Image (cartoon, rainbow, N blue to C red; front, top):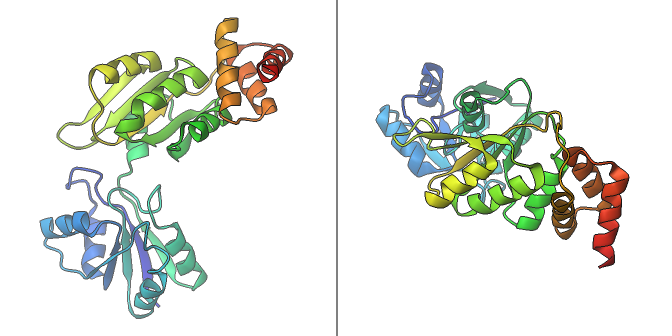
Length: 275
């Protein structure tokens, strides 16, 4: 039985690939690629000739039998468009099915955007929570931010350029004006790592329209030193309730962020729902 190799590939600079990854890609009988165009460029750059098959979000389930059949006769490499497969990219289903079928699954470590952004952010790296791609809809995004508002660890998330400003507005409103870093085009020619407060990030990217895919690194809740003004508490409660967050969860989140007694926040929540 063949081995499924989960191979990390460059997130930008083509030189960010391990010797072991190159050796593996040369030896496997099939490469399952999220984006055959980008993988073909990588293979051409390193003069690797190996058969490719498409394995991406919209065919990942229908391709399982084909790839499992290939594993019966040889080794297969799974690669994403960039970084480590399965991390906010297709791969989980194939890895799970391969394990259940008795195949060996072996990791070939490589670059990954969230960790790369984290280590250059200047924020604590000892504990972090990876949120993946933030929800596209504002209601779901605000609810998620409320759920992690009291987390003490650093937060990591991906965001698209056309939603960045709306997301930063939600972050400031729900999490507060925390320290953060915003990374884009990591390892590429126009690499940028912006660092500052959320409010400063909003101003920066309002003046310079966002381009490229963004990785957000947001400071954890930490110890709350100041008590919020009532207007801010009320506005945050209204935002969370309006986003569909249950009253109890909204009260708990705002109480911890604002350094307010839960009962006082609860009264504001009741006032909002009675209107």
